Length: 285
Ligand SMILES: C[S@@+](CC[C@H](N)C(=O)[O-])C[C@H]1O[C@@H](n2cnc3c(N)ncnc32)[C@H](O)[C@@H]1O
Ligand code: SF4
Image 1 (cartoon, rainbow, N blue to C red):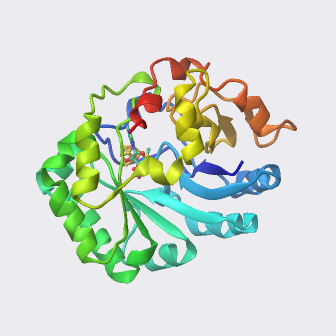
Image 2: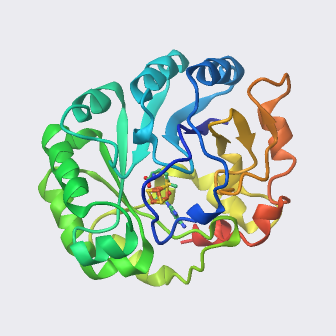
């Protein structure tokens, strides 16, 4: 099976988004180029459909992001960065877009009041200036992650309109996850379904979870979300799940001589972080 590799460039972030359990993050740092080299050696025998540079922090704050992307090219698969665009500016955005296959932009709203409520700590003017530059420069490389949950729905139509008017085809409505049990989420799944249809956008899980894995959600002892992804943090440790913001489910690290995937599959759905995790239910349509 092909998997998504989620690499944490850094656990640092300037923001404190309403849905993100930043308070759980206790370890801070940046991934080193040596760890990237070790990871490449370790991971090259596995089949990956995408490497997503994301993790618990903001990847564009890593000063060597371009070098990391260039090294990962050895793995010959699609490379993306998940970002609010906080670390982008007039000098670096073109080089970063050019180095990637996809730039996954997390955004809550075009409405300033909604944006400031969700993306706390981020500068609305700066982020939307970056987004304007990105849609002008290369809309086809952009994948828009509409995040923040039901509070963003009041201005969802305008937000979607902005991207559609700029020829962005890939727009996904994200669910709200209870990452590690610290976020209270009460999402109306019917409403989400209606909005996806009404605005002609997509569910995020349509992109990330193959149909056969969605069917396996019926099995309470199997977690397709964990199984289809591999998460490596900035230390070079493989985490039990990318939802583990406290980093308490380390399975092994890139320097060990063990089997990444087998070791982790054994613990999926059985880790402390799984107990209150609602990802499982939130991805049901
Ligand atoms: C943790 S962030 C890291 C990358 C970057 N800082 C960003 O915000 O795009 C990765 C993604 O998770 C999303 N996210 C954060 N908390 C979430 C939650 N509780 N449920 C669903 N998605 C969430 C973010 O909006 C972002 O799209
Ligand atoms: S969602 Fe991303 S930008 Fe927001 S606080 Fe979490 S890591 Fe930072």
